[in-house]
Image 1 (cartoon, rainbow, N blue to C red):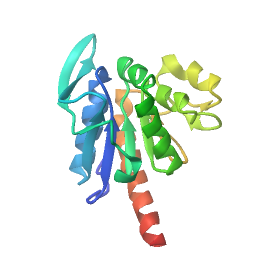
Image 2: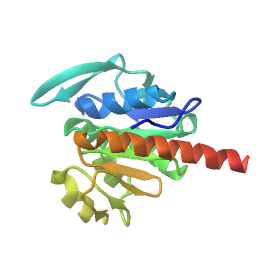
Image 3: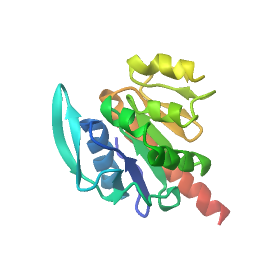
Image 4: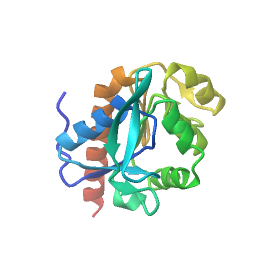
Amino acid sequence: MSLPDLTGRTICILSTHGFEQSELIEPRDALRGAGATVHVVSPESGEIRGWKGDDWGKSVSVDAPLDGAKAADYDALVLPGGQINPDLLRANETAMALIKEFADAGKPIAAVCHAPWLLIEAGLAKGKTMTSYGSIRTDLKNAGANVVDQEVAIDGNLITSRNPDDLPAFNAAIAMAVKAAAEAQSETV
């Protein structure tokens, strides 16, 4: 599936160690391939290491520090899953503040697999239709979300998917949301 042209758009991928390797690398590469500038933003500097299968996977370079990151500098936020990554980030006040800043600005926020934990922690799940990895669907229900089992769920500015198999639909939904937000913004200028 080809993505719309995202030239001139900048996307933030917020992550730390233990991200599900495919859930960071595939969206990053797909969005870059569509012309977007994509920054991996992290509380760590240098590199962060992914998780693949039952062991550590590849490392990716951190493009920008979490400290100083602002939603105003980006068109969308992508939150990769894995069990470790979102669990560490939801305990990080600066990461949670950045997610809430994107939400307050009404910018697209896309979370896959276990990353909806971050949306729960940010208080964004209540009343929203969302999906996630099967083991955290009860967490979403308990947070007041309407939980569905489909490859991508879109509710307002929130985009959620279940697992790496859903990444083509997830990436397309992100790209379409960024394009639609850019078009809406240009109409109001």
